[in-house]
Length: 65
Ligand SMILES: [Zn+2]
Image (tube, rainbow, N blue to C red; front, side, top):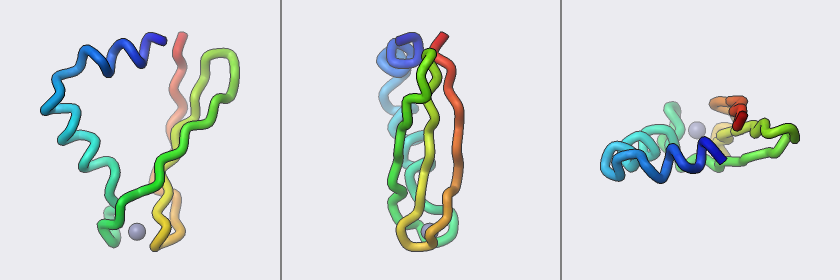
């Protein structure tokens, strides 16, 4: 819940620019497929996958606690 509140409070223009950079593959500029997996205990795993290159560009673990 803390993460969600943070994003709602973030400046919208900054947030959009950030998301645009983060959501395109650095190799082929294809829009990435974002996936969020709930690991339980307030932990969410975030993955970005490029359908063109078949690479996983990042995997982050967010703790919501
Ligand atoms: Zn790619």
